[in-house]
Length: 315
Image 1 (cartoon, rainbow, N blue to C red):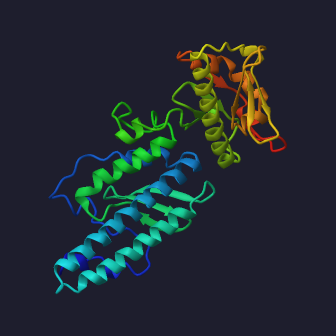
Image 2: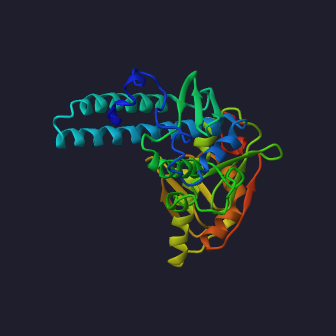
Image 3: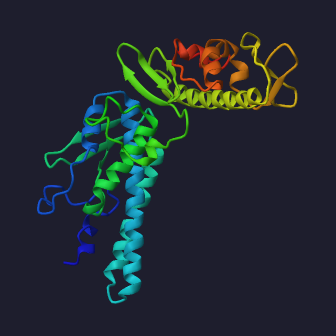
């Protein structure tokens, strides 16, 4: 049977990856994978981690199957007599669309189960739908899993989740945007949103974690925008009185950052920070160090209260 026909009976709308199992590929051993170990470490962990892994892995499956469909169509053009390639391409393209649609539905509230099968295959059960996380081409499985790990670790602190934490995941993770927040969880500290430049926002619980993740990411981005703008003014000879630093809203929509008592100010778009002056007071030491190019670690306790918009409390 032509290899492109092997999956056709299984593609009738089923959300089950049909890549060969690793046991079936024993004659062609692949390098050791770390995705299963990552998955096992979060299988009983916070729902947010499981949702992140499921959304990323299934999105990568969608792209892998879309690529496979494109390859089949190219083969069809080169070998017109192979009519089964066209049926294969259409079936795989449909599966890719199903994976893409499923990934788009996954939120922090989506029930996700993680299991590793007897053949060492990673199984996800997403809102009752089963997906085996396997690339359609076994020889590309290692690269596929590394992409999943890299994307996951761009969002979450993987230091305690990978068995080989000192091994670089990929250049993508290493080159993530400056101060893009990552998340970690422990019974002692609870959920913690941290940046690579020293900010740690500690929340009291996992409730409303979607809002907390969005607020942390946006506040971290605005704090970095503010630090870079102040650093430029300092390089130009402006003096900053950190005790006077305050952000005011202007009628035209921008914000005004008062730098000192001598009339120096910045005009920036800081819609979140302008409503969180108490947070500015807390992070002043971090801002001062950041502007001067020094490393400073600041733990922000009760971050839910400080990052919450007025009238919408978070714990």
